[in-house]
Image (cartoon, rainbow, N blue to C red; front, side):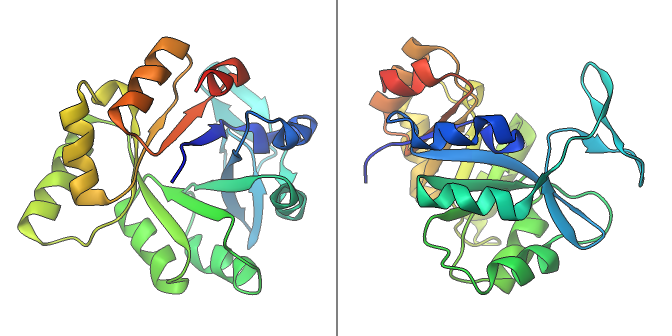
Length: 211
């Protein structure tokens, strides 16, 4: 399978949706939240029911992208939904909206292992991946796979946690499919491609174009 090139967070901004037609972009990613049973895309973590969210630079007013607008992207590129847990369980809301759709160009990623499993239970044919942010999560995943206590699941991993091609190979042996994020240096992206990763996520089209 050819390397998939994913434009990070482009789904969060309607102005960036036309980049789904760029020749270097195979997929765009969006951060998905369930609010009152409705799915919307934005990066900031919601503050209660207010129209504001927490950003690393402070508090910002939310500018949510409706889920229906995201689905239009599928005409031009694949769509990666980074499902975020907030209040309650977003898996049923996601399943309700995705169930009648052709899901062949959709992927859902989750930072929470149990949430990823719930999504897969609701929609067994959906491509679901576990997002690994730190060394603790990585070790827990590898230990669980080696012990047979967790089932195989594709992973997307913070690229700085990978140091050699052997590590990529070992992870693929357990996960089957390995993606990396967020790679904004072209030389690093080319190294990861040479190591055999399946997907590269970047904020920069120049990086995606390089691989």
